[in-house]
Image (cartoon, rainbow, N blue to C red; front, side, top):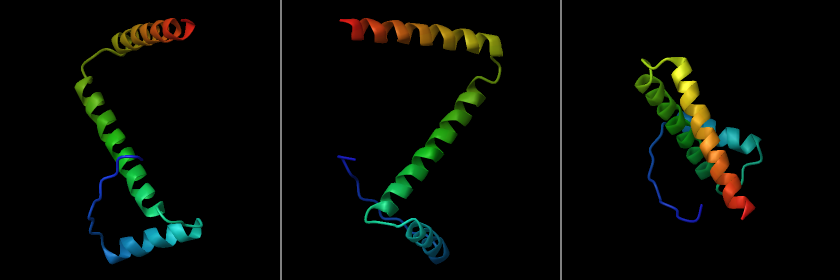
Length: 86
């Protein structure tokens, strides 16, 4: 987290108390609230991205998706090993 951006957030009092209580029970330290929010946002973004990909590929045959994934994994593996052998 080298490049930080400050956010101003508003949440209900109940949410604030619930989260701060949770963090305190886990031995909360300075920065835990920010880390919790960042991790939660990252999970939500990933879920939405996956949902979008599923929707975009709803009409593609599963075998075709597997073929594409295998081809890309093979290409990535060859590139990785070529770079690390040199």
